[in-house]
Length: 371
View 1 (spheres, helix red, strand yellow):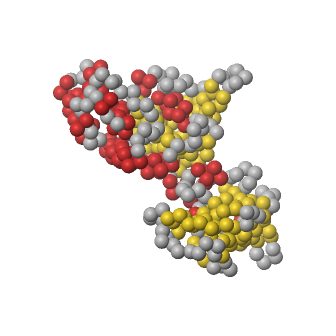
View 2 (cartoon, rainbow, N blue to C red):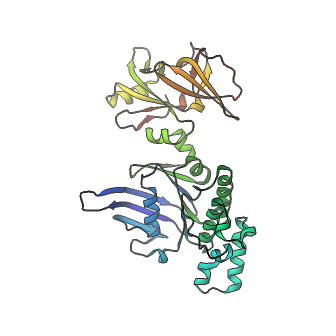
View 3 (cartoon, rainbow, N blue to C red):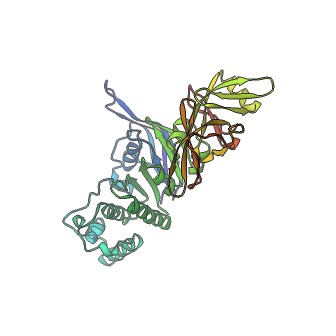
C-alpha cells in the first residue's frame, strides 16, 4: 500500500489561451497509507480532475503528486500501480464475469492456479460468486458496477480510485454495494480515494472528506468536523440534511448584552463579549447565523431565540420536519416523527449555544462555532 501526497497541484485546461480554465487550483493533500478519502462537491468543482491526475490520465499543470514518496508526475498509468473503477463500467461484453475479473492477471501471464485463487477470493469478498458465469449484458447496472470494482481491486493496487461508482444503482442496492466495498477496503487496507457528489456516500464510507467548490478545497475533515465545525458557509450548506438554516443578523452592542438581531426573521441571539470583539475587529455590522435543523428545539415563543408560526409538518418515518414561518423566511426544524402541532401556532425555537455558528457575510468564512 502507499500514501498519496498532492503538493500545490493545479490543472489548467487550454493553458496559455484566452479560454483557459483553472479546473483545480493549488491543492495540497496528504492521504495516509490505508486511508479512505472522499472528494465531495458539486459537478465541475475539480474533484474528478484530481482523481484523473493521480491516475495519470491527466497531465499535471503545476505542482507534484507523490505515491509512496515517489514523484509520479511523468509516470504512465501502468507504472503507478493504481486501479480505477469508473462511473461507466467498461466491462468486456464478450467475456463472462470470471473472464473479466481475471483478464488483467492473465495479461501478465500469472500462474493459472494463482489467478483462480485470486478470482475466488475477490468474488467471495464482494459476494458475487453467483455471477461468475454471467455476461455483463445479463446483469443490472448496480451489479455491473460491482464487477467493475472487483476487476480493479483484483490487481492488489497500491491505490484504489473510485469515480462515482454508485450512480447507476437504486437506493437499496447502493447501500449494499458501498457496504461490500467498504468491507473489502478495510480488509485489504488499500489507500482509497472516492469521488462523489453525494454527501451520504462520502460520510458513510470515508475516514476523511475533502469538500471542494469552484476548483478549490474548502475544507478537509471528518464527518463530525464538517457538520459541527464548518469552515465556511459553502461547507455548512453543502454538508448536512436537511440544509442548514441561514439567518441574516444585525450586530448590536448594548451596554449590558451584545446580541445579533435577525433581519429577515423574528429573533435575537445573545452573544458573549469574545464573539462581540471578533465581530468588531472585523468591522462588521451584519453577520450570518447558521443553525442546523437537528439542533433546534421547540419551546415557547417567549423563550425562543427564533419566533414564528408553524406552517407545515412533514412525517419522514424516523423523524419529522417542521417548517416555521418567521418574518419573511422559513426555518426548518427536525422533530419527533409523531409531533402534533396546530397550523398557525406561535412557537419559539432554541438551540444549544455551542451549535450556533456565526459567519462573515463578505468572505463567508466562519467567525465562530459557538455563541
